[in-house]
Image (cartoon, rainbow, N blue to C red; front, side):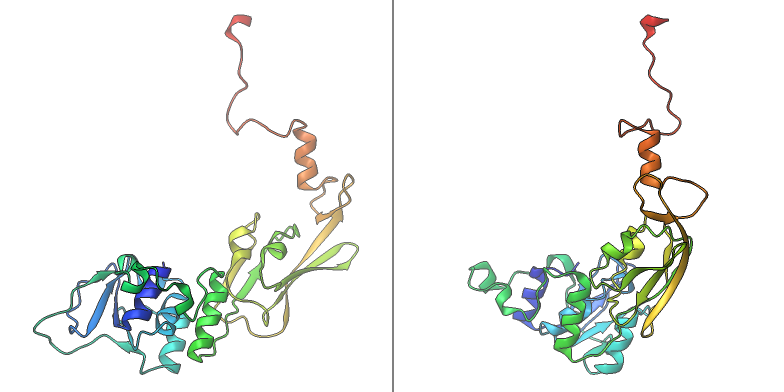
Length: 267
């Protein structure tokens, strides 16, 4: 949800921001503040959202909602004068809400005089790196790793290839077993392993992955008689890809529940 436009506006205007979740009533904030109407609960924002707004120049960000996240908690503890409660005093003339995804463009941006060079952050980076950079700008230390658990891993290696930080690895323990390892010191918490696992074997158990190398699961494996790749032992001689190719030599198959097409003229 954070965009160049939003961060350019923050950097140019340096507003005191009040975050208003989509499920909350309008907030009567003083005119010195800018209420931003979100399209979701603050707890559902990307982790880098609030840190980037603060890092780009907002003096304060007020959170109205009672929901929280590990990032919000860390900011409240480290920067209590910048991540603040919602303004509580009564006001005669309340500030007008602005949709967070439709903040006004700074005049210099409209004239093409400045761009992302005025920002202390690179919004083209992956979310986990954006969070890390924003926290560095703010001087806030936060463990980004998450605690993972694995069950019924197939040792396919998709999670290992998907992890941008190299926090996951598959190690052959013996001829008949492979271990899925998680290095919490490298983990950035972006959870691509969870999203992309074809077996849905990886889940997040907590927000702190601890430290060091951890074995998530030891997988019994065997070698495919065709391609010789190692795969989870289930009594089959072929790994899932080779098994599919053997059953579907033309590379495709009918969707489940559909009958083959029959030419009515042949009846």
